[in-house]
Image 1 (spheres, rainbow, N blue to C red):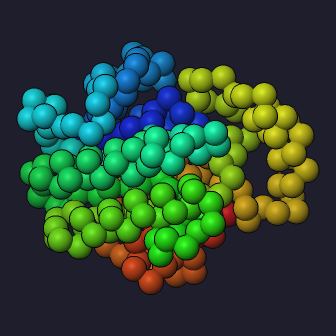
Image 2 (image 1 turned 135 degrees about the horizontal axis):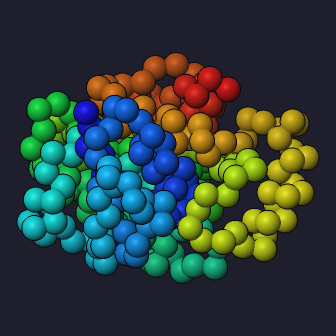
Length: 242
């Protein structure tokens, strides 16, 4: 039975991942690092909500509370729209890197898996024209670097496309006006025509949890970068059977 750490549990992807974790018979405990209470975890004996304000710091007392964890799904994130690059970089790159550096030292009897929810368009070579692609790509590259120096620590970078909640909005926050318009009008029209650009959130959750519960080894097949640990949306859809 696994103990999984989760961030971003109040967001669109994170809330779906949380529900999948709580429903999994293979998971005995989920430690949720959050700045505020998590409605989706209330009343569930598997859920351990830890109010954590500074995602650049993981003091010994916090790591003690995370003892026994064998994986982390990093679903914390924010849209880059309207943000300065330095602010976006802290949330998107500095936070997960600090966590990975701390969690790689947690005692494990098998590989610790760090599943980073990145995004389509991330570029580890720094050539992306858009800010989010450069920052997320650099985060991916540096996370893989941490894993390469620790044989008991694996990183999976997941690059979903347009995350699609379908008919059920599970995030704690309310959808923005643009999201309401998109999911009510644009998405239903485009799903049949451009299905490959979408990432159904329940399937993203399914793959994320499967990787967190897996052996931490390389993934093969279409849509997986040469490193074996960076999965494009096509690979996520393939692994989810869609």
